[in-house]
Length: 150
Image 1 (cartoon, rainbow, N blue to C red):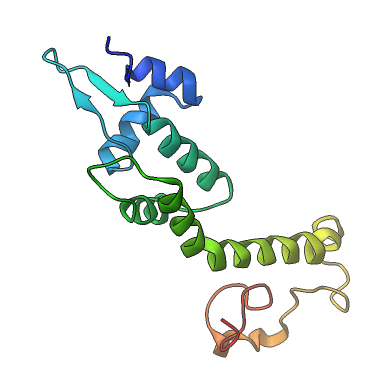
Image 2: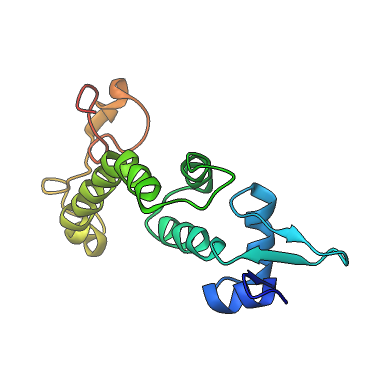
């Protein structure tokens, strides 16, 4: 094997991602492999960074579609530079800040509700009598940003 490439098993071992998931990521265009004469996958070592990015992004709730769009913003035909990764990071900053805000709100506002069984509607942060917030849109309106708040 050429030392600059990894087999699917080696990429799986090094990245902690199952070979089946790597094949799925490849099918979605998230990672790329070259093929040998015997049709075996060979991954450039640089794919390790992409797989790490995918794993971390998924852990914080980013969809594979969003991950693909971000990875598609990286240059093709050359290894992404630190500046390329920094640009991707800047593009995600607002989205990640909103996720952090929402996770903090979920942590702070739901800790009492989880154990209460909603027996105290006077204190419930999600109580919406008469569905009065339906006009603002679908979903948990008290948790999601209000219209006009971005």
